[in-house]
Length: 277
Image (spheres, rainbow, N blue to C red):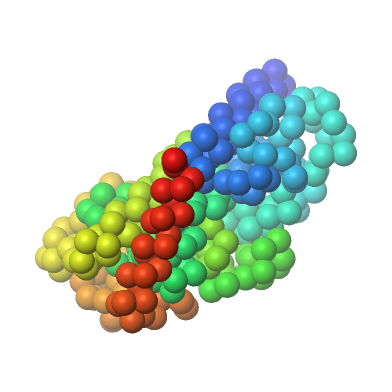
């Protein structure tokens, strides 16, 4: 038997999922029924988006209450009993298992971030100061067939010390203490992709100086209350975080021929412009 306060909390979180789902759809971070959202509800339950629904047109009663095994359970707020959580619920459950501090997960399909994985170009380099402070390294996972047990496997190690991951050819996973916080981290990842693409079109991507990276890592440590020996999850090229170069290089982060990168970037830019026009 749930209390009034618990029912009120569930109602508020359902509304929040609808609000953030609409934002995902309006910003073009998901298409059709892509993407999924979840929020912790107490110690042993989650609220998650339903399978097969556009995130731009949800109602609070569409959101599915489920247990920590990903199975739908009864809720008085649901008016359709046959709804089931997203097929990517396993991905969310793995995040919650590895990160007790996380209360919300956003899985989206931002076009440019995905395009970078297809082109084999990593976004893990330290380029924008606000990304280093607020996200740390934006690592790319190995490829995993969507909606299978491979998905949790490829994020298992990385999610422990990353708040934002890019899934090879499949989108992003961002986490936070609230759903909106996780959503804002998604915006930051796609913004990083946009800036990096523009820099490549203009010439080349210049990394932050090593001393500046050290300062930013320290700012991140203080902001998150991390231990004094925190050095960050690593760095692809310069090792300024205190790790050996290549410690956490994503599986698809090989350096490609610059002419090929330029041509891919131009193709992506044309496609994005078509969508915006």
